[in-house]
Length: 184
Image (cartoon, rainbow, N blue to C red; front, top):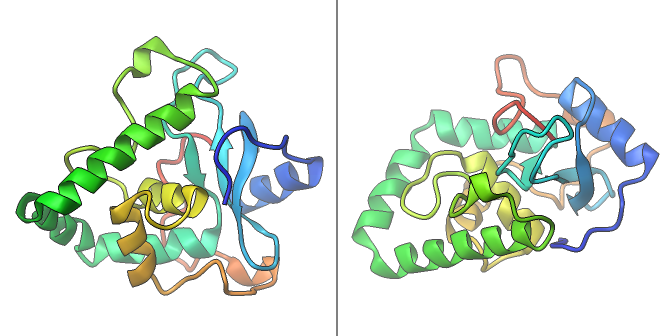
């Protein structure tokens, strides 16, 4: 678990993340979570990409096994259930808003990008839009920071404690390969 400031990723980290993503990793500023075996699970991406594009997703799920497990939750309708819980449970909604604020604070500790003012990731603070981003936030920030990400990780068939060898975490056929496919 790592929140800013991040240690610079090594060349080996970038190579592994590129392998995980199936394309060159872009604008990675740190590895914010790893498996028990040390494999990258979450990368942190610059708030403004090298080409000048604002990028709100600071915490990006890179592990194919984690991504596949979260994709299965999304396909099973878990986001709909979590959105209903946000509407029905004021304490959960308040904690989710706090997670939104923590996410923005983490990102703005790296760089303030005016185009991203008030924007976090994953649908925060009012809805669940991307469990990949929310699970990545929970993995990076640790338990208790993002309640929806925590719930997703509890429901997932994958855990960072799984000590899979790097070749064992290939994405099953038909599973999504990233939070939003645009960086990391």
